[in-house]
Image (tube, rainbow, N blue to C red; front, side):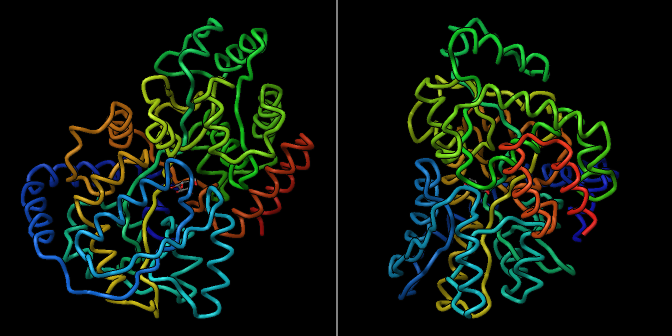
Length: 437
Ligand code: GAL
């Protein structure tokens, strides 16, 4: 397990991480100007590269696609002779994409770069399997080694070498709402919300004939993510980390009580949830067909794409204020990339201040580089940047950062079954068994 994940999982070294992060932020203030100038200088001379660049991701939703396009635009500015192939495979959270990618990797047919989360997903699934090359030299040449917080660098590293260029940092534990819809039902949302307040709000909405919580769990990550947020809100980051790192039992009574309270939430969910994707559920709150949606802040990207930012509000998932669930996105350097020079140019482009400044406002995430000027970023982005700087950082299990690929799959399967059968004992036992395995 790499250092940052170990830090996050143990919960013991958060203070040290804060220190490192503060140091990184301090550095950014002094070197930002120089780094920006360097990025601008790189922009000035377009390369003479030709041929293709195939980029593999799962960014196809109304908010994700334009954000990906912004990365392509920056790349094409630098490399006008290269033909960019968007090989995105639809399916939020990347379940379908990752299955296609595994087949391609096993058949020695990699794309020129693929999207991955750091932590366990990157290291267990790709680095240890021998599918990636290091990007340590790119960290040095593009200044990522100085501009990215050390904690994030550690998450992208194994044995002191880096394997992922991070482009954005999502906050997974958001609760989003339509201001009009909650207002009309007489529900007030403050700066934070407790789980009791949330249940009372859902009751009020139900009496007003409004769907309280929009869920779209056709995407396999959604039930696991909703549960991980609920668990964090109920038990706090230390117990949460202990559970996902195998230091606490999934079948103890405290956890079962949270499972029981989760089943109560399901009474307020849209009945067609299993037919909808995550972005369909976000569209429900945008269109006023439901009040709340819990989602990572890629949901904010949907608000930007649909030009409804002013109509929408946010708060940390009830009870989880003070924690930031990390869902970091980045790109790999494949071993045997068909167009290696173009792939390296892609990673350099994604590393740049300009690319991260263009991408993140559209995606809902905050830049992985701390030297990206964020004055023009949205109020939400500023709120998330502040949360990242001060809150307890915990890696998402539902997005593969904090647990092994095998546990993640077991967690998905168990959460999907639980939403249907609401069988607390089976859910608890299944997770306890999976943790032992
Ligand atoms: C996450 C990914 C985000 C977003 C989300 C929904 O795994 O990190 O960037 O794309 O899935 O598709």
